[in-house]
Image 1 (cartoon, rainbow, N blue to C red):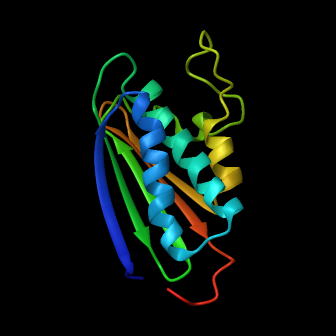
Image 2: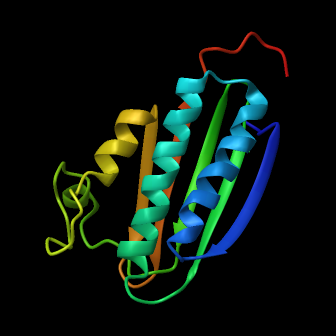
Length: 146
């Protein structure tokens, strides 16, 4: 299926850019007239994905995070990728409460949160090469007007 609109954004993996990415994704998705709740779901999932890239992908160094947002007739697809350290075991990383940083005040719920707020998520990763998280959200509030 071809998107009806698309945008790409690159930013440095600074924690201050997490809010920026969240707002940009929400503004892009808002063109499809989602409900406030649907928009909040998108913002929360994007926030988690970007935070994962900053904290786990790049750890204590800066790198580039790429975000690609695509609009379809009644849905959005948001792809967030980094060229950081990657994930050794995706299945393990997606388990609730799993964390690779038990010393930090993080609950290990990033992927669980993304899954609960989006209709589907896909994670691709190669150790040493980075991770791509793709978030999918269908908007039920649409009446077909664009």
